Image (cartoon, rainbow, N blue to C red):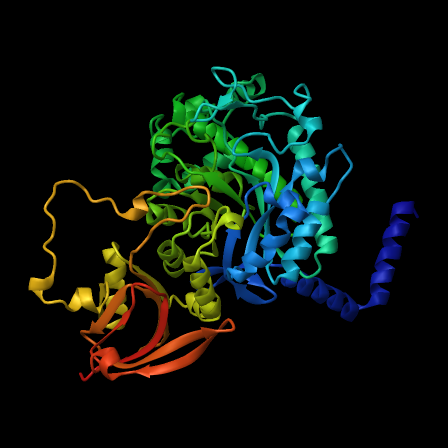
Length: 571
């Protein structure tokens, strides 16, 4: 008998001695271990993050990029984050700190974040700052930066990358033959370390790289990139385009259609030679790189993983290259989904004044919404969670933010999260937002009650006491159109609410700046709900003067309030 047959016989013999029951127990243990890892799960109408077997709503904030590099700097910040009622913080895992010398790893900066987050009752999302941070290679170790022969740089038609505000910098080319292997080796080591040390699963999710893409041109012009540009479009992309032809994003559909919807050929044959074609080409290759890193990381620890995008086209950044060309912007989402199916979420860094529009573009059946970077706006927070079942919301620069409004909102949403998440899957959660007529109509259709924004004084004032409307052809820009950046707080006085239907005629409403009155349905009871020690508790039964004898009630403009109401009908 040959050696390999003898070995096979021994293996089969051992298996038969172990017996089916033991094998089944081992399989069951492996299944249970996998289930204990934080993961995404489709539950009814919502995709949810499952932590320790239960849905988790990330009430989060992202630290400034450099903050987690130093334990002493972070020491007073952890308590501040917990006091602001966050339950999750987005930190950083920096390649230059983790692998300062090739093959020699130091995870102390990551261990510090895991330890301190756990100590303060927080969960953690880690950004893998590897090859790309806002398209640059600034987080790569010195042994990478100083070896352009091994790790070639991006080349543009004018030479180097240049940001819209005039800063030139080096970016590492995605087409380099060694860069992905080196990044993946470090990322694998990081995920292996987290698997071995983070036994409490403090780390929930990993962000793979940060704002990929390239500035200064729509595509890389380096020799390796030009070689790739001249090759045929991969068949898996062409197959995806054919299968999704009726529902492609407009930018992609126009580019493909301009060449007659070709089903084979080079990138220029299929998409043309303009800036959009270059962006499509780069999007595919960046997405394939992120997919490779994601698969590598998940092979060690299968946490959910996402990547984020610097939005475009926005403001004065209209053409690819003025914003990061090839990143996961809305117009390129189909390319990214075709190239990177293992990436769980493509997430917007959302500083655009069109918050609702951007959310709608990213909240797709194949892409649950998570907002890892934005500015503080409580109405936007409630909209993302209530209307789009967002997994989380995360103002940037949270270590420098002091916002009573955000702290109050997170306190309220934290207490209501079990209710929101349980009814989310049944499609029984909605949001209303001032300026969005569709949300008001949805509320009135669902409850039979009418809704106005403002308070009793403004809504109930007699016509003669009301200020006449200003006449002007000029468009009035709401405060939220002046979108702040980098951790600033928006002045946002819009009325808003999350509405949870707990029974056919019973609703929990949490919000501010709205007035609700009887219309098709009658207001039966109104109960105050208070938040104490992180839990919702019954308050007063409101009646008489507080509800205009059962005709209406308000959620005041100057504070966040929660009410439980029941309705009835005489018909």
